[in-house]
Image (cartoon, rainbow, N blue to C red):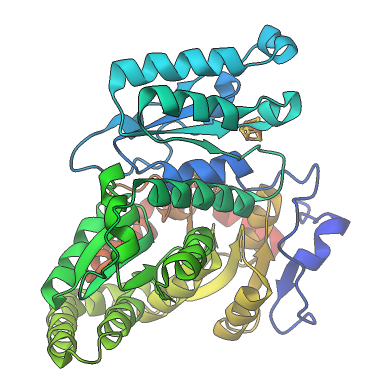
Length: 456
Ligand code: SF4
């Protein structure tokens, strides 16, 4: 088997720590023809707004865009489940010639009449940007008649990277917050908003419970298990706590500017980062030492409950090698720390949307020889996973087939997971999952070992 080569124009987005001079190129459009793992702008918006469970989500475009993102997050709801439907205007050739505005208006009225949502989001796809439908005007007209917020999401797929999709979603979300907000200026004492937590496997409920035990009120979560009504008071929170910083920082910045709410960046993956997140929030309320005391007690109890099992798992995982490829670099930081706790070595790490500072930090955190990639494609991932002889791949839905085809264990840390991986309980679930995967005897029966032997 011949070693896999990488495209010439991609060479400055792939580095090996210790071997190359580190000046990674990132934050740019994907190279045409490289078959990037990155999602499009529209998909970036869709994943951020998707967990608003009582809103209508209408994809204005061809049916393929809607099917691509249908139930994409599987975000759990404790109530309505309207978000799990994938509505589309199903634009065809005739609409593209004559315009899709009438079809959009008709679809909105029909769907609002049937499903009675509390708000509606209309996602613009590539073709809508090309034919120039005035989606904002249609939304305004429908909003005036239907009496609910109807918000355009300017997420035309071709107009940038997934990050531009996050920004389009933040703009729409801010518009909803601003439109639905109550005219009560006072802050809610000891309160926070949680940003960038999507309740994929029930994480929102775990994190909410921690804050409840600390004596902190969670005003709204953007956007895990969310209701439109939750946003009416979010401008009154004392602090915004941003987890998926790649996606929601722009909203936090806007809320800081407009409502004077400061924000901090946190992560709830792994023991270290979860503890730090809770302590950081507690220390935001220095006049209330009782909150810090409750936080310390919570952390002590939760860590003591999971440590014995983690030590047992560590004995089996010690020295095993892991590859990480995720959407935002902030998650990669936490995963590296969590894997170190379990005695594992990270041999590849990359992200879809990291910036220069993120990659510099990743470089500092990794051992010499670790491959660092920005905006990778399947061939590059396959190449380095084989060359580094990884035992485990942590990624999302598009990395899963790569791992399984190459014959190595996989852990979904993105949309498709069914168990919560956040908080202390999440760390225990994460450790159990990778232990089961990596230790499975099935990997002795699949071809990875032959590929690796040929490469050696
Ligand atoms: S918006 Fe464009 S890039 Fe995204 S799924 Fe639709 S056609 Fe594809």
